[in-house]
Image (tube, rainbow, N blue to C red; front, side, top):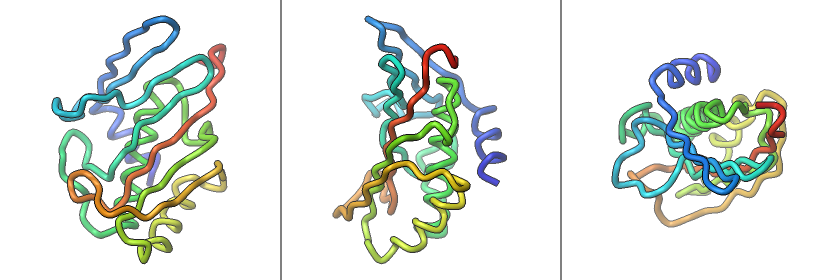
Length: 150
């Protein structure tokens, strides 16, 4: 399911990449204009993925259903961003998960494990007071993508 969501989202996405001093920035189409950041930035073999939310692709609407569905959509959105740089969820080496309610840990963890399909990057999970757009889950990641692989 995550692959289907990623493929659908990828079909709706246009990458904006600008190379500057060996650093390449990617911006997913549909990221609100008020968001003054890139979806991901590549520096050498490392790809730094900004915090993603469980937004329905091309909108600022958080998917309904709570932390589980939000985590699934968040990782689908991350997969879409990774694809812009020639990477996949299997290239992740580290993730930071932010939850507005630590009681959502189990639902997030189940959806996270399902989306990563056995891949286990290093991870930190932290409770926070609030997230943008009223989201319950935000995930930021780092991926290792050797330049010759692109």
